[in-house]
Length: 430
Image (cartoon, rainbow, N blue to C red):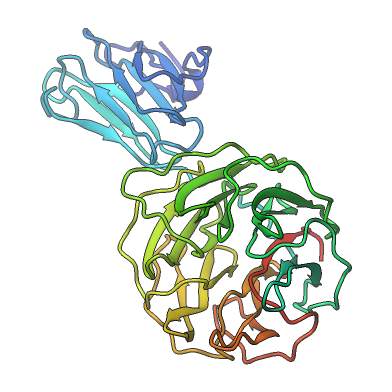
């Protein structure tokens, strides 16, 4: 053997083991719950639907190498479990549990000897390759001006945060729908209550901010549900009130705006109405707060759209706050209803890991049943709402939020004063 050896990874007696690039990656993507791995192979492991238990070879030779890669960045949702098949793994006997549960992780292992067994050469998590471009503009639509009124008026928001005057309505006039962005540059409004009762109708919003006419709905008809973005280009609607009770079901929205059928709530998820919802961390979402009874519970949404069970909340128990993303990977919940005709203007920042902070003293006129969304790529705006639940006082005030999460004082209103509306982001162009 002559020349420079660059790929002799822990190999004995001059036999060169392949580097990861030289491994046989010819096998199909692994989606099953089990895999019997072979040496000299690389495997793409897709755990979107289930965890995967990998059984290593029973009689490995020194220098044998295997690589596993998180195909869909789902190992944090459904982990990979290593069965070393009677051999040691990092010096520990086979009766130890070895699992890997980090999104984007890859595992490169080499067999050393009977004492230490299989050793990871690397087990790094790779950051997601790029973050989806944030929307630059936003749209507010639907709601009520008070009493039994229902409107479908909309107002566009420019990339500099200017709220435009009213645009004539499109779609069934309704209150308490949900809005969210999808497909990188478009939006969707769905659900709500029209003159006949709860509905599941939807209206897509193109990347110019034009609302389409009604499309046939999918999922349980309900109102007071909310939408959160996830996965960079998809979304999920969750919670709300159907014809008889609060629910904890959810409906995914594809990156082409298709609303899926109901997904049952995971165990330990509280049914409720009027939570706040928002995307965070570039590819995940969060639902927090809500009514029936008032709570500050939070539910994280994975980058695969799975709504997790309740987690301990932070901040005042309340319903009907508004959520909005800011700073490219963080979020904020603002305002809301505290009960007994009391309205808050407190806010709670959300970190890029989904941690909700305690209350921050309020700025702006206190109100509830308002809506908010990002604009300009890294800022947010909260607008409209009801400032007096005892006498019903709809407003058209707005408050901008900086890219560091600071809420500005009130901006004089533009557009029809209303509450129980929804908003969505659209357009990647300023």
